[in-house]
Length: 275
Image (cartoon, rainbow, N blue to C red):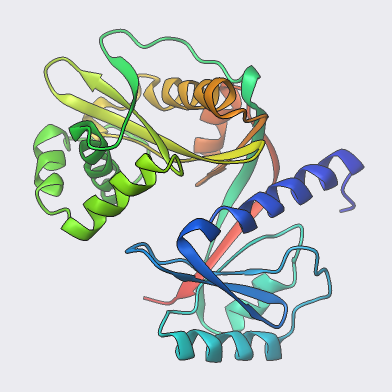
């Protein structure tokens, strides 16, 4: 289906942002039509089709990328926007890579809004704030449990994950917060502490909202939407961000973000080794 010019422009803007955002913690390596982001941090990165190169990618290009990944000692992983390179989905499937797809959404930062949630306090946290690490552990619990429904996992599981955070990762999270590369907000319950978390990564006039997660025991209260609205507002007011984007894991999650002002503009793909 042919994209309307407005959507084409939105996809191009988001593709450029997704190319720029890994660079502060990576060494970019050009490999044919790909840019391989070799991480300098505990967080692994991936390759992306180089921005501005619209020629179809071939199986030979993937072979060259796989060889470059082996040379640099990293796994073959690729992320891309489907509307920019639709041919890649079939190519990665032929290489027996696991393919995941997400709803790519955007909104004007000043227009994102959500209802307040009673009984919790929402705030942006700084580096070295204990809530920053509790937020990371909250995300670990939420993503391990999976889904969007309520469940038994709560503060005890969060604290168990918190105790397992590696010193190198702790230093990395604080460093990114200190440099303003990742801005994190949490929702705190007076009795349980951090029950939900989310972050954004600003880059010029754009930012990606990511890793919005709620402990299963605290779900279905509107915390994800409220945190997303707070992050968008902070990005607009404090970082000069005009447009925010995010990747929703499925249509059910996309509906949550649609309610606070986001709309779908494309599909984001990620491919990684099977297993």
